[in-house]
Image (tube, rainbow, N blue to C red; front, side):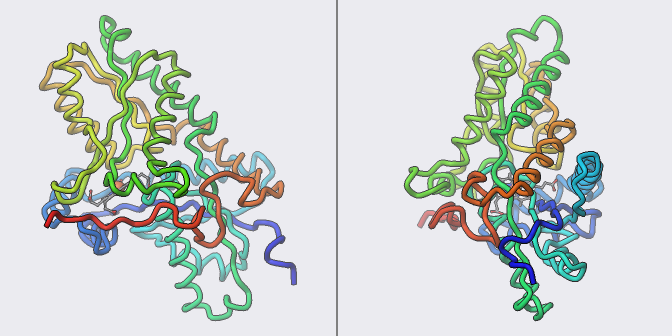
Length: 359
Ligand SMILES: CC1=C(CCC(=O)O)c2cc3nc(cc4[nH]c(cc5[nH]c(cc1n2)c(C)c5CCC(=O)O)c(CCC(=O)O)c4C)C(CCC(=O)O)=C3C
Ligand SMILES: [Fe+2]
């Protein structure tokens, strides 16, 4: 038998968040997402409403299937003969089922591409946990896997890859071109990413680095995209906060921020969703609906930049990440976020912080 530590990789799994495929899926999906994590009932009901505006269907599954389709083509074009599987944290196909399916098909060394580019609990550690949970399910459902184990290697954070920065910069320029001509050069450029509890961000990253890994990465990605697009000045804001209102999350919120820059005299805004790779619900609801309505109400022209997932460079980047591994990269040499079988990147990094309710 080949040593499982050195055998070549034999499959790829795209690991994502998941989303409902119809109205009956919405509540069970939301219950999976929150799994006992202090999200108030009212917030769930209002998020369910957002999904219901789109017939109870999140665009995320279709968008991921499209990325997978293009990835299969790109692997074939690069003579990389690896099948691509799909698994999710919160909705079907569930990662637990996909890992059993891969095992049954004979795969033992799998590269896992997460649809989050980031560090932090929600962007990285929780994907490691998904892998760990799927391996526990495998051990229960396929006892033979204990003696014939699988290795699932999560690929590293990729927010800083040149393909991401260049695709983001082109999307930003294209959005600016869609604004009325008289505000194009003076519109405020605003980058946005998913908010997280401030306490979670404070402990994100290797303990020795002083935390805030996620917000530091989002800030650095925004600066790099702005520079590549020739933008001198920009803001970084947050969106889609959840949790009880008394618990602090990263601020300012995009909608409040539009009011603030309008009051400050901004003649228009370009909103760039740097935190997301595709136009899933957080983008089409929180930006294209809520933020766009606010901009309308203020009479301030706003253009939303495309997410990078549709850019061919996104899929080229995935191929490069895979190629590095096929060339023998180790988890240590690969960069932060890359570990096997759900291990944390660094001892004690990115712990789950339970929301503290004020006493
Ligand atoms: C950092 C981050 C990313 C980016 C990294 C990544 O891409 O992974 C992200 C992505 C996404 N978040 C998404 C949806 C939701 N996030 C929620 C809740 C939460 N997100 C959080 C953080 C993040 N989330 C946090 C700290 C919570 C609080 C509760 C908890 O700790 O779990 C809830 C529950 C209801 C609510 O509270 O809003 C929903 C429905 C969708 C799918 C949209 C679709 O269906 O198209 C996607 C891609
Ligand atoms: Fe989220």
